[in-house]
Image (cartoon, rainbow, N blue to C red; front, side):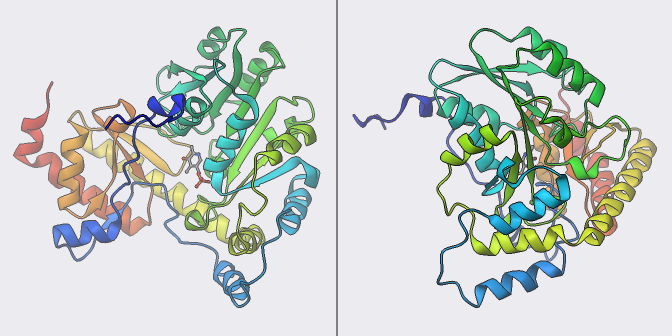
Length: 375
Ligand SMILES: *Cc1c(COP(=O)(O)O)cnc(C)c1O
């Protein structure tokens, strides 16, 4: 395996990529007729019916390069948020935008801080730039802003925050974030990943960060079209920041990073508030259902502000994952996040939620499940 090729140093500390199982593979391997996937926080209602229309129109004439300036999309985002069009960076999903943040601010030997467990990509992009990632454990499943503050050094360039946090679904409030931003040096970038902001039901207290960028130019807000808009396969998201930061981030971007189908689809999605309302409501009802049934089953769970929920089973999550697979339900084992006895369930349609609960009841009763508990 070890050749003399000059692989970059940062790559050594990054785990090789192992793709997740596709739905079709699971169906085939297990010989099941119906499999439901509640593992990747995909939109259970699909996308707005306006999206395929817009996408097909673009596909009629694919020969031209897309608009590298994403001008229509930025104009619409500007109209909706009150920010200037120059304050946006459009990326091939938040994944790419997170990488842009690292490319813009992190160099060899620099430090970045992230909560853990959270979205592991923050760590990967930091290491790719040969930076050092400092992981700060959650406190009772919440991002601990005070503990993060204590890890700041002269080398800290970026603080990654995820609100609501993936995988716990917890939020920190505007008051907490305000205090944090006031306390830390204004030269440290705070990258706020708000992939699940549209699902928050706690309402009061969730920070309206887009309105804070004027006051805190070190704030970068990351949003995606993959979740409430249901465009995960098209790969598109946006960052909002000061004009200066957006300008620098745009220098990292290859000008045609987001294709025309994705741009048109995002625009169509933005214009369908009714669809997003239906998704929000489905999610709200789904989580109420889970709260109730987990309660009945005597299972602990983390109240969630996102489109997924973590439940404590007291059993080994990898074993339960395999057992649930055989029942035709794909979920995310907590082991992936160092939460061995937890499962992360994407909230699905009510039918999918019920199928999951039935499968869970069944496997929790199974003797192998009981025997697998290592406590
Ligand atoms: C799903 C998710 C994203 C979205 O990534 P895309 O590249 O936009 O699909 C970003 N951050 C978190 C925490 C997520 O869970």
